[in-house]
Length: 159
Length: 336
Image (tube, rainbow over all chains, first blue to last red; front, side, top):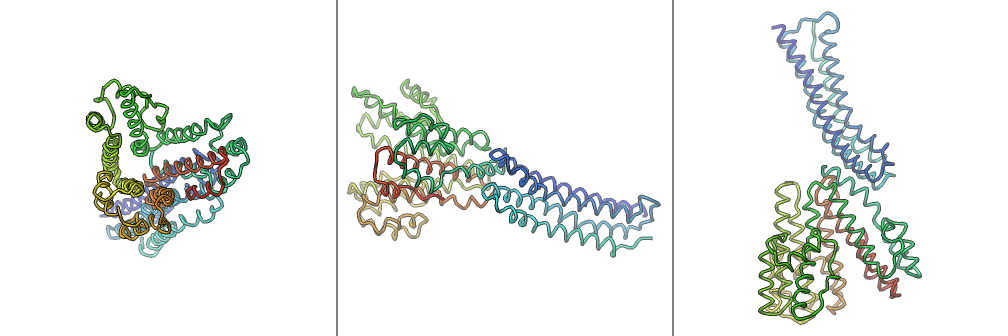
């Protein structure tokens, strides 16, 4: 049963890191297509395009933070603590907010960034506003990260 | 290539559209040389260098052709550009057929009127039609050309031939748009084609009203497939022109006609209406500009480029011929 608990916890961590990473990759890809289109005609917009394209990448890092926290919680870097299947399931559940919200928000942030890249191609002076709009989507990725951190910290007691 | 890339590239290109202040400066040019010099600072520079009054059309057409060719390189579905260029192909077919009819009566062929803006090479069209190899013609034109020739033999009426070709063009346009919509799922290009048919029908209606046609005799001139049926457009005939907007107020195009309502003289309203309908066709697609990946943006871009070309032609001709500046300003379509 101890092994099942560990498996569930690691499975949760893997989903959190994987889904957030996939979301970021798709988001950056979508924004990158838009950036490439703009830069084909106006290479001077490279810096602005790069900034906007990078925004959906943060979700991948949030996923990684949660993976790291789970590994730390299980003390896999030192002497692993025993994990019951209930504790494993609780860790699995704690990983879900970041897995789902980061996956979906990264894709939508990518779409928003793509639209904002098109906006700055016409109105370069609106760069500030162009950064704010995708950042609004980021809010929910950050909230999901905080939820996962809180659940992992206070929701699951090991040892 | 994706539409996200294509639309972003079009957005960046939109910065190069000539704006209202440029047209104003162009119209105010003292000589054509000054106007061409001003044009040399724009995307038209590569075509404007060393040009004269005789080559104004070449400058504008070259830019339009270059735009279509450039778009064809990165737009995922070439059919979108095909829908736009189709009109020029069918115009070329009309020119070739009319030339053929004239030649049969020992007249002169007018191949100088052929446009290079078509998607199909005009020389190939001449070769296929004159060589009677109709089966190789694009857009399923084979049978249509045979029908046109038969109609001509019976009636000697070029207008009837044009109507057959226009009806076929709209059928092909609609079918292409519907295929595209089915493939892309997110687009509604067929809707634009329906409005395009409406605009053409209304343009015909204004011309026919000017020639005092009644509803029954005007009916064959209106095409099927629009949001307003041919009967609906024919009903307008004989009604005072200023009431047309009200009669069509239940349709989207009704608002476009309201512009001409202050003019009881149909002739004076013709250019205003024509301009308003062109503007309307752009407005139909306006919602697409809020989407970062809507395929309709490709047609929207081409229509705006065409609008720019039309305005440029007006401005340059005005300067070259020394026409009244205010008259030229009135003719210009509103820039966006």
